[in-house]
Length: 294
Image (cartoon, rainbow, N blue to C red):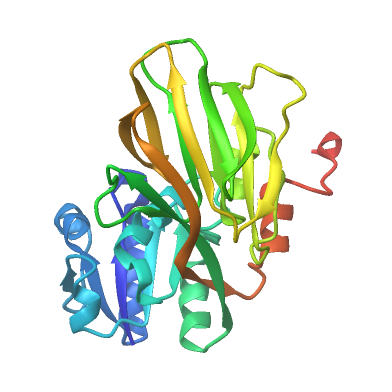
């Protein structure tokens, strides 16, 4: 078995857990290839019992067969890994070294058990739909897609912006707000949830439109079919606005043409026993827990 180990940075408190991961991989005879910037950061802090390879990016998937990508961090680390994994269909296993994680579900003290289950095939694979941004002029280079969400946000002023929104060419609404979120079902537990949007099951064929601090109180989040094409026209007192795909952003103006549709591929996530969607949201949101007794 060959795996990619991906992370963005190393915190001193994470070193023991990173060491545990590489020790466990060595115990099971798993060949590890480490994302190059991360390898350069951890090489002085982690002892490798076996040689590790260097993983540089998307093109490496075309010359070498990898079975899994293991991320170390939080949900943001998985979103960063998605820009590298893209359409390769290599499943991602997220080990949570952060706080609240709906995608990185493996607790850091469960690393040996998680790798054992991976080796023994005690897991399922869940496909998560993406969204794709069509923009004129083009934005986000060769990664104009997102696993979680697309947003348009104000940038240079405290004033609201105006976002004219169309679904399949038909006018939906003009939003006067700080911004607008278009989330996938996976993204329904992210920024959209903070804006009052609903939690949607991952296999739902939907998008969620959630306004950010709308001026009209009767403007609520909206669920639409993900075979829709949603287009946006943005204007405001300032010349520039923010456009984001997950944690990536670009500056746009009112002349940019924006259309979002369902992505051409899915991102595969490893789902270990006892780490399914229902178990995760119950645990992360403390459903059914009477905090008065704690």
